[in-house]
Amino acid sequence: MLYFGGMKKLFEKIPAWMRNRYVVVMVVFIVWMTFFDRNNFISQYGYRQELKKLEQDKAYYMQEIENNTRQTSQLKSDPEKLEKYAREKYLMKKQDEDIFLIVEE
Image 1: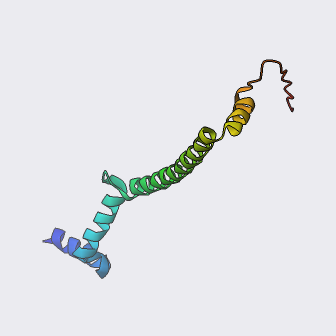
Image 2: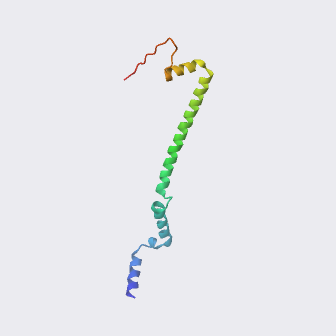
Image 3: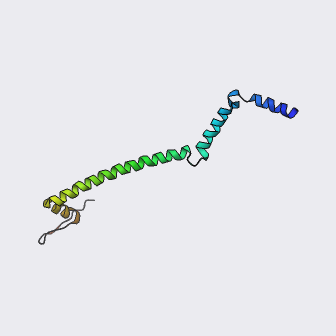
């Protein structure tokens, strides 16, 4: 009997809100979901950050696709722009021309 009496005194020293089984279950649940579960809160935060970055990348690449499509349609429709593009990007020249490249340091 002494053993159980000591446990009763020890149990009574714990604050009442910590003896409530719902609070205990909620604390255990939060600890489990924060550290131990496969889909824990820390992983979910990392996944959200990665999703934001991927959405930003998607927006950037969609803008680049739009720009490239517009530029391609301009090059297909205007021979002067096509010639200018070929001269600037690929250093193409006519038969009797010389090209001088100026490299800035």
